[in-house]
Image 1: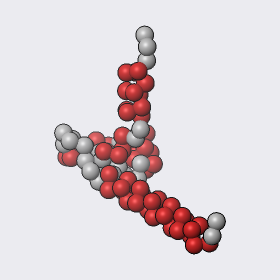
Image 2 (image 1 turned 90 degrees about the vertical axis):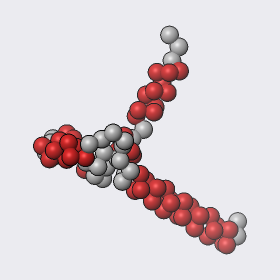
Image 3 (image 1 turned 30 degrees about the horizontal axis):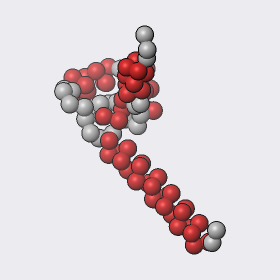
Length: 87
């Protein structure tokens, strides 16, 4: 491989990574529909020291905003598992 093609590949990978991180950060600011922000703030103020507060720290504050990316991958993967399981 020539040096120009390897540098283009590295540049493309870096740009893709930056793009994916930007999409994720944008998704942490998109709220879930039907969530009352005042009630969520009251709940989060009371539970900052517990498990919910620790989860909020690991999610980058997305739980306190109840963002769409705060849900993670578990709901879609669980529904896929339960819908395709043969009984």
